[in-house]
Length: 494
Image (cartoon, rainbow, N blue to C red; front, side):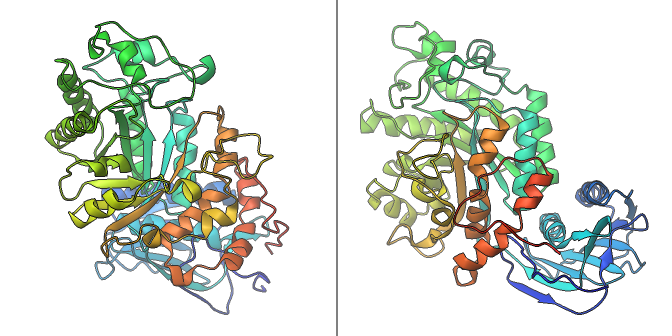
């Protein structure tokens, strides 16, 4: 059985790939997924079996073993090995056995993602030829922020997003849950947030919101795929949906009107109002209760109608509420102009702003998450003819999303202060899953490689060749995508 003529096209690029001679491992009715008995391994085994069954048309079963080295022919074995740290994984493919080894369940999910990419159509099923992959990420935070406030994207759409993220080894889904146009998460302490502001959206389009049960189910779905959810409640600006629901947050005590436009910077909280601090405490407490991860995002961006001192007071109020709920604080880069506790994550987005406060915050112990609008805002148009998206940060073609280095964006940052990379997609112009996927693909794959692969292993021409092989997979999954003219998408997968 001859080996494929085309090279492996793994995205993001692994640290080491060694292809060997030999017969392939063929997924068939004899294939068994073997895992340990821990809860995370059990979930991974079910996921792996379901995915291999779907692509091969064969029923793949799960077998649980306490021993570390399964050797039965036909096994796809997932093995925890404490000699590997963090998200490291090894993938070994031989004719009779596939073994994924990692030190953590997260590492095993990355090995499964790579296994999916090395499988190729073969005689009515899928096969992988002998290969060894050794891999680990350069950044621990590799995210995608999705705005569900301007237009609502519900659980079914976001499960598709999570699957896509896991396939490219992204591990943080940051959900922008509140803004001027709508509030998207039901909170027991403040039910009017969704009762009054859950059904609104840009241009008067239909809104929507997550029930507590829906949100918890999404968080669990993501966790099983190695993706943690970071919710964002944007304060002290971008709050018209909250002001519409609770008039006591306004100086005159009256609710504001609904807002269906896309302008920013006009809405705000008031530090001296008696209702403000309890509102922040209740909201972040409720959000923390349904979020098992470490972080909550307080927003903090584009507050254009507030003096610096009051802004700093409100950022402190929100941060105190998050920490009182047992979580760590994330905020957009504007919070760097206020005193921050060490360990606070500052998300860099606007390359037009003075970077000095960001450098000072990092020197004082803040950590930087890089989301530059001109490279990682995937709601920007590809070019002037793109029907969807905005243009305030320019056009972002595929190469623009690929050719940047997170640690070199802001001169003067202390070494090690950059903890990760996050792509962002805002939804002023996006109304459907097809719209969302068209803006994400292929650019999300590019940002994923920036986040995972060290700079000395990244090469644009090589990436353009590898990503071309992913178009047929997106088609097979029914995902809309943009055929960038910078890539030759005609590829032979044989």
